[in-house]
Structures are given as C-alpha cells and as structure tokens.
Length: 81
Image (cartoon, rainbow, N blue to C red; front, side, top):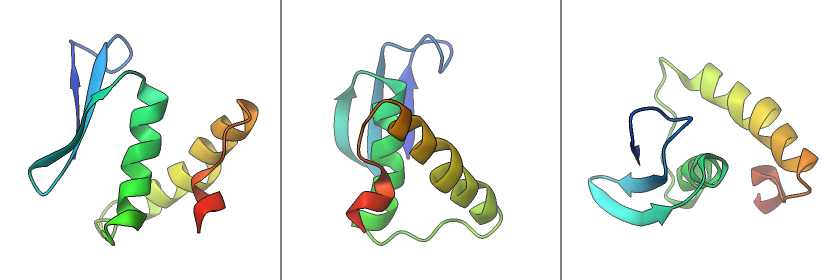
C-alpha cells in the first residue's frame, strides 16, 4: 500500500501511496508525510487493519505517530476522528 523510491526507507527521496493497486498519491516527499497518509487511508477508505498485525499498527498509530506529530506541532490522525 505504500512504496518508496531508493534503496532504504531512511534515504528514499519519494514515496507513493496506493489503494487496491491504484496510486492515490505518487509524489510524497517525506517519510513522515507518507506514514501519516498511509494511516489516514485506513480511516478514509474504511480499510481494516490486517488481523495478524493489527495490534502493532494500532500501537504505531496511537503512540508513535501521534507523539511524533505532536512534537512537530502537526495535527494527529486522531484529530480527524
């Protein structure tokens, strides 16, 4: 659902978000923006977290991504609920 260009996620220059094989945004310039869009897509498109990794994704969403966004004074994903 999320792809990158480059050899490593930490050095990638561009990211893209696709849903069901359709590119929704093909020009994301930062990893933080790509992650935020990726988690937001679950809510926007009504996608359910895969059951085998649901707890991990929920932890990343609620505790890591939202804390990172609040440190940068950006709105969190929970703000839009």
